[in-house]
Length: 177
Image 1 (cartoon, rainbow, N blue to C red):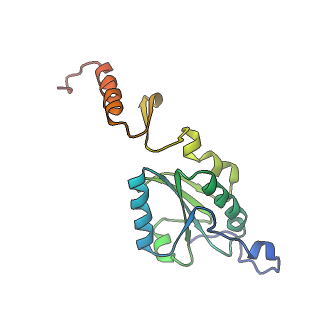
Image 2 (spheres, rainbow, N blue to C red):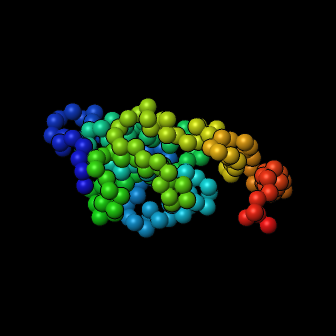
Image 3 (cartoon, rainbow, N blue to C red):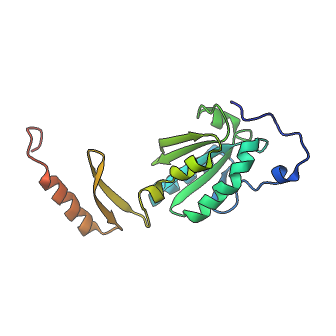
């Protein structure tokens, strides 16, 4: 499965009594609960951050409270926790080399990955603040990787108007009817 640090054998209670799944973190205990949460996130248009961790892993224990804090700070994202020892067969399908490993998913597809308990990098990968998402749905219109428009909310006439204006601004090409 990979490694973290050697299993903790010390007597320091501060690293033994860590709540890995407080706040808005959903503990995944079965493949079925994983599938249910991914489907829910897809319906709600949420990006998923999945933390593959181990209860004995020192860095996992250190980052756990921060992960819980992020989950409370960003309810527009879905935060999942998978214990690699409890769901070892499932975890092995994700090719995890070390814990913690964070996967960022949108519509069930991986859009990012972070290995290690690197708080600054985890915070940087917080897509809702990077893209200034305050509500869902939020639509971004990009051209050559640059944002050319944004629409917040499920306003179908506005979305249709925006998409039509963008399509109309594209020069005619032989492939376009």
